[in-house]
Each structure stands twice: as C-alpha cells, then as structure tokens.
View: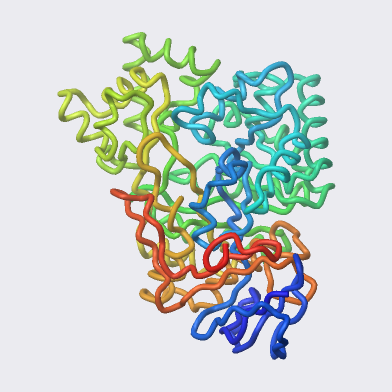
Length: 507
C-alpha cells in the first residue's frame, strides 16, 4: 500500500483544501483523511504539498501520441486522463483504406513525418483496444469525430449526404458509441464537416442523446458569427436532448471581443431553461490550428489535390485571397507560422504572415496561399484571438472546464501542449488571482469527469481509481513560451495513475 501523508488535500469538488492523507491500495483509493501509519505502508511525505485528483484534459488532439508510452509532455503537467477525438477529428473509422482519413486529419493529428506512417483504425473498438494496450501511463477517452465519419462515407464532398450515406454514418456513430467512445464531436469550421446542415446534425445528435454521452462542438464561427453559432448549437441541444459541450469558447479577433458577453448570455439562459450545456477554454490568449482554416469552404471541396489545383489557378487564387481578406477575424500580423513540412521553409517558423509577405514583396493573403502551395497544404499557425479581460471572464465562469487543446506540429507547437495545467495553477491562479486554487483544481478534475460521465475518476474519494497528482502550490509554474514551448514545467512532484507512480519520485 502507498500512503501520501500529511498534504493539503483537494478532493476535486471545489471545496477548500484540508490537511490529510490518502492511502492507495493497488489501483484504488482505500482511505482519505486521518490515515494511521503502519510499518508495512510505503510512505511519501507530502508536507507543504497539495494532493489532488489526477488532472483530466477534456480536449486534446494527441490521438496518436497517447499510444506512445514514452511521451511525457502531458504526464509531467499532472495529467492522468486525456480526451481525444475532438473538433471532428478522430483516427477512425475508415471503410476501404485509410488514405482519405489520413489526408483529412493529418494537419491536426499527424503533422510532419507522420504523414506516411499508415496510421488509422477501421473502427472505434480497434482504436480503443490499441489505446488500452499501449497507453500505460495515461487513461484515454475518445470521442468519435464527425469529420472522420463523413470522410468514411462520402469522402471530402461538401454536398448534403444522401439517404444511404446518412444510414451509413448513423450506423458508424452508433457502433462507435456502443464500442465505448465517450461521445461525438463536430468541427464545423473544417471541411467537410462545415457542409453539414441542421437536419444531418440533429439526426446524429439524437443518436448521441439516446446514448447519454457527450456532444462536443467546434462551432461554425468564433468571430463575427459567434452568437449565431452558439444559438445553432443550443437549438440542437434543445431539439435532441443531447448534452452539449462548446469547445474552446471565445470571441476571436479584436473587432469581435464585444460578442463574448452575448454568447455567454445565450448559454446561461439555456442553462436556466434546463439545457445541459457547458464550455471549455485554454488559459492563453492565442489559439492554434491549420492555415487552411482561413480558406473559404468552397476552396477545400474535394480534398487536398483539388484545393492545390485551385490555388495554382491564378484567377481562382485571386478570388480566394479576396475572400480571406474579407472574412479573417485576425490581422495578418496576428497569425504566426508554427509548423511547415519542408526544410526550406523552416526558417519561417516564428514569423507572422505579414512579416513573410513583406519579405516576399507580396500581399499577405497571396503570401499565405503561396506558402500553402509550397507546403502542399500542410501549414500550422498560432493566432492571436482574445483579450485578457475576455479570457479571465471565461476561465472564472462556473460552466467552464480548462483544457489544453494541444497538438504537435513540425516546428514549434503552442505552449499549451507543454504547460497548460501548471500555467493555470501557477500564473493564472496563484500569481494573477483570477481563480481560487480549489476552483481551478475542480475545473481540471471533478468538472471534466462529470462532463464525461465518469463515476470513478476526477475525485479523491474512497473506492475511486487511484489517479493522483501531487504538486507544490508555491512553485508550480509553466516555463513554456511561444519561442521555446517544449520546456518542462516545475512544481509537479508526483503523478500516480491507477495506483502506479508514472512521474516523479519513485517512477
């Protein structure tokens, strides 16, 4: 047995910390509180340290990396459970071959050298089995992605699904949920999911509602169309009864910051009405995605080869550039290149689109399109999205869970991949005082556990699985930055998953 002795115990509920001990018996928590020492216990002294549930990342894109036992960028932040399959991207299912799935999802799930590694699983059950067998240091919960489902039945087409295709996508969704997926996700700013109409989404959300699982959505807009996008998702929840999680809620772009309060008003009113809706956000003003998200949806029809053909056509490229300038929520100086495929363009990593355009002597939109051609569509970016005031309002809201939304790039990843949870507990909570420590811990433990419907994780309670993170509240801090993101945080002392130390003393 393992005794974590005399720490400041936070149970994950948001309650104040109390001095106490936690006794672990194998993979379960046996006792919590005033535990009497015995000579046959292995004892870890936690004097001056916080004992909390293992952190749960409700939204990440490490679907492939969680299968690599040696990856520690999340474990060393105190994370013991990872929720993948977000924003419509999951590495399953495919029907005939995985090529279409790989082309669709590679920019988020498998950047860089993974493009040709042959990843992909035919079904949710195959992926979940691989996760159980290969992810010994992390609990993996997966949503099934709407975009991946759509590619499986209709490729990259952006036309409404036929009745036969609807039957097939419904069957695949039911199979995935039945196999153990934690829910369903959409990415309505990404083709081909962006072409789904209300009838398609309502039909699929009814299936999710019947399963009692979670529907998480990357909405159609976080910019000028934010309020309309929120209303669309609330209408889906109202019509179907599904449990709705709005992914990374924010008002992106300076001109749109004033829309955030309207969006929150809509969400709070729906919640008061009885709609089961919450949201999440990462503790950073900048976001990260693929550069193709700035292209109009029609330019992405048919997949990567068709997109590149349009970009190489001078007239269509000019039309695309005009639409990008007209619709972008950010200034081109707000968008920084974070990842590319080729060695010759690696020098651009860390430069903004505006800086690249000036060096090339062309307009920024044209420079962005040139880069997409050169990199065959594989460009990752970091975008400045929101104000500190808006970020504080979101993080401190009672309906908010805190997430990383992290993924790897061939270049410099967003620092959230390496530092989200120490950033939250250190700078945001301790230094800035935006949250109280029990509340911050709740947003990365008990609250996400409740959203997932977990009944045995997310809290330090007897008979729960022994997922525990021990940290130093005075020292916890992220050292990740946009310039050097992959630096190890400090202050995480011990991470225990299912009763086994996976990071820190004794690992």
